Image 1 (cartoon, rainbow, N blue to C red):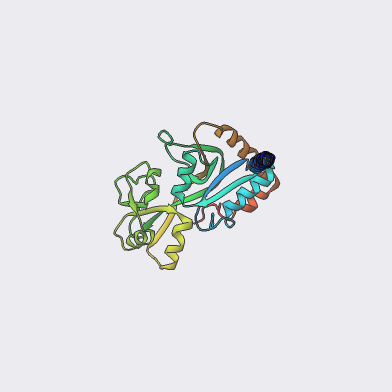
Image 2 (image 1 turned 90 degrees about the vertical axis):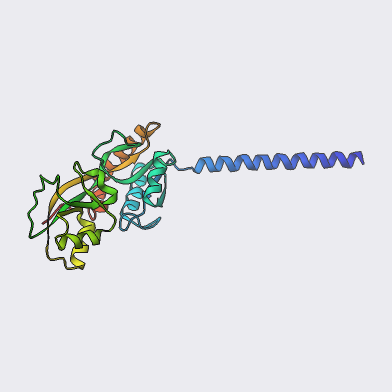
Length: 246
């Protein structure tokens, strides 16, 4: 019986040792395959429609290929994506229009500008409005972009509704991205609306404050430079980085 007990104990010890070795190997494998960087992309039509579809998804893939580094990315709602980069859960987020004032921002900006957005001033043809004198006028913009203006501007939660009000002369102006606004004007045949460029904004990659953000910014700049030099950057980004045209 004692012999049998000793054999049983020995087998148990061997089994525990095997499990410990397997656990260590599994941990090593996970560590060895962990991505060099974690990225978050805001889910939006054209920009990032799914985990594997969108202009910015293609950009992240190209950055990984150009740098030789592995990047694990997620495509999630904008608010969550921003929250994840601010809390340091990811190394960078894209995209964000460069804020006018960074004093209160809980994040940093990339050195590189990845594309531009044309903000257009839409006005009623029957009423002239000077793009340089908008203070005091009844002007609206998308509610998430109020902070991008140095004058009082009213938030809008419905772009189509605002443009229709403008067409009827109920507001003086509407300012927002041409890529989002122009199709609404065309679809609804808003013939009383005219347009002019308000400002062409830079769009940046967002980084957490502190930590390894400086190293991440350097990594992104070097990879994007390689893409620019090869012409691949323009090939990927030109479809969404169009100059303003009347």
